[in-house]
Amino acid sequence: MPSLAHGPGRRLLLAPLLLLFAAGVARAATCDRPLRPPAPDTGIHAPWDGLVRSFVDHGEVDYACMKAHEGQLDRYLGLLARIRPERLSREAQLALWIDAYNAFTVKLILGRYPGIRSIKEIPRRWKRRDWRVGGRRYSLDEIENDILRARFHEPRIHFAINCASKSCPDLASEAYVAPRLEAQLDAAARRFLADPRKGARVAPGRGLFGRGDRLYLSAIFKWFGEDFTRAGGLVPFLLTYLPEGPRAFVARHRSDLPVSYLPYDWSLNGR
Image 1 (cartoon, helix red, strand yellow):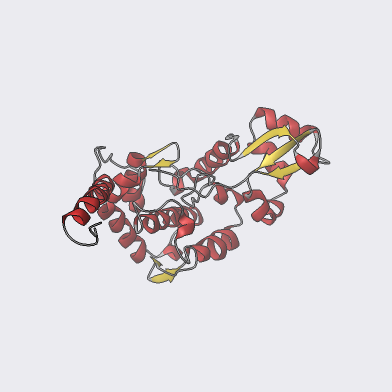
Image 2 (cartoon, rainbow, N blue to C red; image 1 turned 120 degrees about the vertical axis):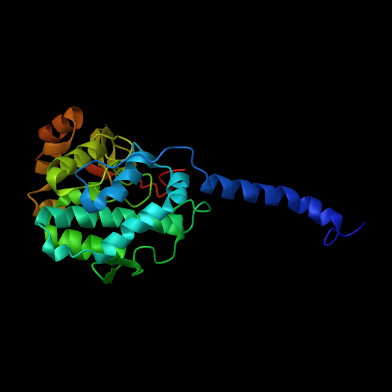
């Protein structure tokens, strides 16, 4: 039997693979959606606001369009590199670090797009100090833990920052900005806890838990439980932000709340 290692037979076998690869690259670089203008009060965050208004729908990110407009994302990252956070108000600083974290995460994904299925495929994804704010380099871990959590003591940040995964809180379709920050953080917490797939739901206990309903929460509440305790306690937080059905369950069981945690899906949050 003739070998296909060389010659026309090998070229015939490779041709479909090359076409598939080219189609994938074309899809990644093609965007038929218009870039919308930013909201008028977004200031330095205007380039980011325009991108997420245009290419984020109910938390799903159109990474092909983000890739096609990566130049606008890079312009925003350039602004972040030159800003002086210490000159801003507390609210403006908090909004800045939330938006920076989210923009850096999108940039991280675009570096591997379209051949990426999960942020967990990227080595040292949260440890690499690739991101510049105010002339200093940070990792995503440093922004989340050393700045957002340690400085601001605001548990709602966990529903505003996005890890590019399906079980993460949705990436907002707008930039976080100081004038609207309180309302935006409230909306982010309520939106996440109203999603029974990944935020919270009441369901019958399973396995070792036996019979009876339990409150199933995102693993975020397990990983960062101390943040909610420090802010007044998990139960008061849930009573404030849960929708009516789960809220009534928590109110009935507040002294012995049966809690379990939902599985976490690290699949990419977009297409």
